[in-house]
Image (cartoon, rainbow, N blue to C red):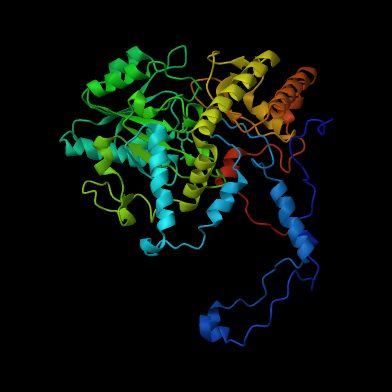
Length: 491
Ligand SMILES: *Cc1c(COP(=O)(O)O)cnc(C)c1O
């Protein structure tokens, strides 16, 4: 098969692991001899190992190749197109890394008087994110989107308790297409979760929503555009209805990259928002983080924010712990500071017009790919002008999982699969604004090629992938019992 023609990334999977390259006595480096120390005395004789550890003995070049080639086995945004809907895997500009490095010698215990530049950056970022979202105050502390949700819902709970309505308001409303973290967060804070259905256009069903509302509702959690990439056109009505019964409106900001500079959650009527800096503001994402999920609130909730905020006074910048109704600390120190520097750099580099263009391009790219995929033979759920992502379905008889596996042979990452749950065989595609027209065309060509091959050879898809280091995994076992150690097969 002619994979090379289509390959979007390298696929050098046939290299010996470091243990197999080992030759007795070979060394990558020679450290100077250590001073004589009686380790038995220092650590206790019973703690000393009796035989030497079986470590690979290799040259420096073998070592470098081992790790370089291991890295090439990964799918990454630097190596591959990665249109993972909802997760927003976009390019992380390298200049952000340079900027973050400038602060690498700061210590969080340092006297703030000696770190005024860092505090100024935090202060300005609070301000920028407030302006972008239409919120009055922002905490940079939460460490991820889900952590931002927890922060936001704790703030809402504290607000209702302060108003003497803590007992009465026990329900959080989420749409049936919501990201799993929304209901999970509400449940963690002790709320009962009530789901409302989506209508045939992919929006919140207004009559179901009205029915779920009442004085027992603490909060409504929404993302806009929502998880099927559709803008909630009734958002002002939803907001009016929610506030009429005293509920607070929570904005899951994971999809802000579709509307940035065009529409602000604050103007839509939201009271609390979280942002995923690792989705919209190009801080790195995946591989376990760290993420960053700042939370913004309207003025009536400011006093409940986690402490400290950063404030500016005549004598300079300082940490403000003076929020008597604060929910407390949500994270050690001042958030994932390196990511905050990266987000700040991104915002400053693009400016107001640049941020607007990001959203415009994200939406244009997604609509372009939606139409391409439709032409090839995919079905589009809620086929209308979408925002930054859309949900497709494979042609009848084919399975989303099989197509996702086949994409791996072409060096392209699959889209998000089987989410949202309200669409059968869902393929949720988010190309992002950072991809070129040629890459989008190539992805469509690959998908088209996969469909053609599936038609000519019914068994092809069921066996894919053919060229990855491992083929079809037992996914449950891979997640629950990962093999993370090399084991010697002989002696
Ligand atoms: C990613 C995402 C979240 C959770 O954010 P994390 O940073 O992964 O914790 C919540 N809601 C939506 C819609 C998302 O896409």
